Image 1: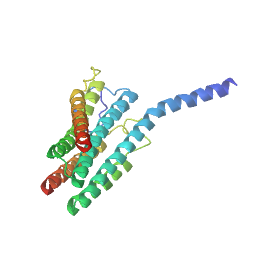
Image 2: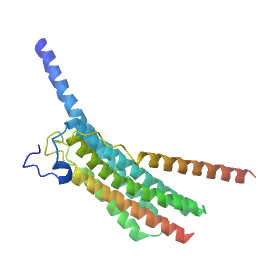
Image 3: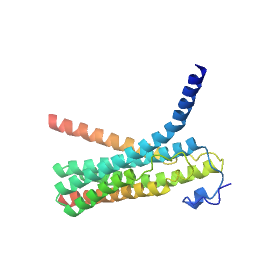
Length: 130
Length: 114
C-alpha cells in the first residue's frame, strides 16, 4: 500500500495501489513528454503557417489549418497530462495500460493536412507553369 | 582480477539503473527547450505582424518554459520523493496551452489583415 507520509499529487494517482517499478514509471513520464512535444510541434506548425500567410496572399483555408493545428496542439498537451495520470494509476494498480486513444486522430489529422498542403503546392506549381 | 570484474559489473549495474533517470531528465530538457523555441517563434511572428502585446506575452512564455525546464530535478528521480512529475508537467502544459492560445490570436490577427 501507499506510505502514509506520501504527499505526492494528484491523490487520485498516488493515493491508490502500490509503488510501480521505477523504470516503468519513468517510461510513462517520458511518453507523456513525447506527447507534449508532439503538441508543441503542431503549435509550431500553426505559427509557421500564420507567418507564411502574413507574407503573401494565401487562401483563408491555410489560416484555418493553422488555427486547428494550434488548438490541436493545446488539446494534445492536456490529453498528455490525462494519459499520464491514467497510465500511472494503472501501473500502481497492476492493471493493463490504457491504449493511446488519441493516436488515430493525430495520424488522421496529420495525413489530411499533409495531403492538403501537397495538393495546394501542386496546384500552385501548375498555375505558375501556365 | 575477479575483484575488478565484479567492480565493473557493479558500475555497469549502477549505470544501467541510472540510464532511465538520465533519459527522463534529457527528455524534460528537450521539452522545455522546444516549448521555449515555439514561444520565441510566436513572439517574433507577433512582432513582425505588428502585435507587440502578443509578442511580449509570447516572450514571457519563452522565459517561463526555460524556467520550467531548469526547475526539473535531475538527481533524485529514482527515489520515491523524486518521482513526482505532476507539478512540472502541469506547468509545462500550461506554457503549451498559452502558446496555443497566442498562436490562435496570431492567426486571427493575420486573418483580419487579409
